[in-house]
Amino acid sequence: MKALIVDDSMMVRMQVKRALGSAGFEIVEASDGLDALEKLKANQDVQFIVLDVNMPKMSGIEFLEAFRHELPELTPAIVMLTTEGQPELIQRARALGVKGWIIKPFKAELMVATARKLTQAMAAS
Image (cartoon, rainbow, N blue to C red; front, side, top):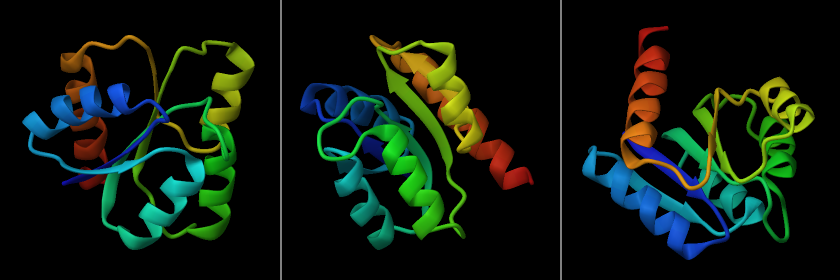
């Protein structure tokens, strides 16, 4: 299974990579939404995306809008990993297909459990 980690913090990407990598996920990394869009075009078999909200060049929400417009045939499970918790932002992300919202700092076990649950649910449908 392949996961895309999108965060402008290299430290956060390393922590998520360690957690998901130990659970058997193949990892692709991106430093912002623009980078993520390009990586997703080259890795259309990604099944799980961990996405930050606040990033330079293209935010997580802007990425979701562009992704839904440019690659509508792809249906990976998407989880936001952020320090943000405003209800309006969460609603907007959910309207764009986000399945989960994890607040930083995160527990590795929660990230792995969420990834497994969402990718298994996708495989079953």
